[in-house]
Amino acid sequence: MEGVSTMGKAPGNKKTAHPRAVPDTNGRIPSELLTQSVMVASCGILVTDCRQKDNPVVFVNPAFEEMSGYEAREVLGRHCRLLLGKDRKQGSLKQFREAVKHGRRCTAVLRNYRKDGSLFYNELSVAPLHNRSGDVTHLIWLQRDVTLQVEREKEVAGVIADKEERFSAYVENAKEAVWRLDFDPPLPLDAPESSQVQGIFNGVFTEANDATARMYGLAKGKEVIGRQFREFMKQSDPRNLEVMADLVRSRCRMDNLASYETVADGTTVIMVNNITPGIEEGKVRHIWGATLELSELLEAQDDLKRSTEELKAQKKALADKNAALKELISHIEADREELKDRIQANVEQVIMPSLEKLRLNNGAEGLTEQLRRALEDLTSSFGRKVAGSRMKLTPREIEVCSMVRNGLASKEIAHLLNIALHTVEKHRRTARNKLGLANKGVNLSTYLNSL
Image 1 (cartoon, rainbow, N blue to C red):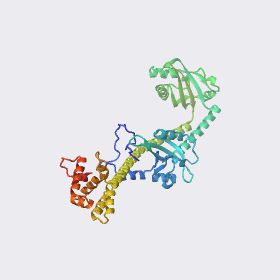
Image 2: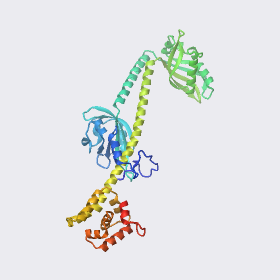
Image 3: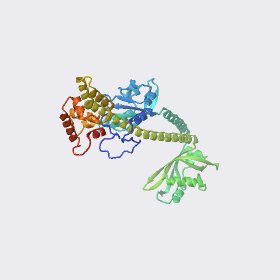
Image 4: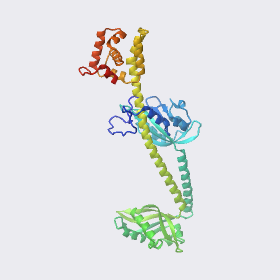
């Protein structure tokens, strides 16, 4: 991938990246370490090439193979939609299409299918990789099998659905109390807390269904309407005072508020209330409430809340890992491109001229030795740097520089290249000038070996 930045961002991003690994003595993250990190990652990783038709897959790690059941050779060169099977009308797909189109990140859960056709839920994250020009060249797809979490969430949701169905039965059979309290005068939200608490206890029921009446041991809702709230909820109970104080602090809006209320036979029961206020001009004029005794539903809701919190924590952990892996992939791509450039430059600028001489002078030991040394140093930066100097060296000057770097004297170079000694000295002087070494007292061989 040409020119992939280490942060995967377009040029102009001034934000400094914090290192996520210790660089080697040359200031680079070892490519072997980065490669191994990707290969042993527990989440599936694949990379697609946006520059090719249909954005084909160009890399997968072992975790992807294990998760999907596909071997790398079965996926490379194909579009990753193969994991969708025939299930291609999922709502989340639109998010990914938009993200890919606009070069944005995206994370969502998709239904995917393994090679054997079995379903699994895939938490898929996509992030673009940019080149130095800011163009998106590749996409990195990070995958995590969240089947167990989704099934658990469905199971808990099923429990909640079952409880909600039972709740509906309560309503249909007049088991749920629906009521309204009005306040005259209205309760100012900026009034002292104690004053608002007293005002709630003084509230009067203006709406109450038959379930409300039965909740208090009465027959009809009209037996509740017109009576003060204090008749059913003991103000002398410190627990009730604290409950009403909490209600005031939440601006008379609360879900699953537990209260301790008195029924017709004088006993106290725990009620669960969902309360919504009617507020006008900063004053609470009334509150609507739905009350029932439903411990099982509350327990199921607590289970769902815990499950949701666990899933959020897992998603955050995955997001952190995704960021680190993206950084690793960027470094790997950059190192790979640099290595490719080095090899190409050395082959073109150093090795090929020697091969040509070897072809014309079959059996020449000196040229053979030059070729051996060049091959041993194939991945060095020498060829690229001398070829990429601001004032370009000619092929002959590069050839002379290579021999000087390998310790050959001018006479040996003249003999091997079959040119005059003064010509070799001329090439050396010209190379020193182009490399900026003129009048600096720097040995040419020492400088070339430092590249």
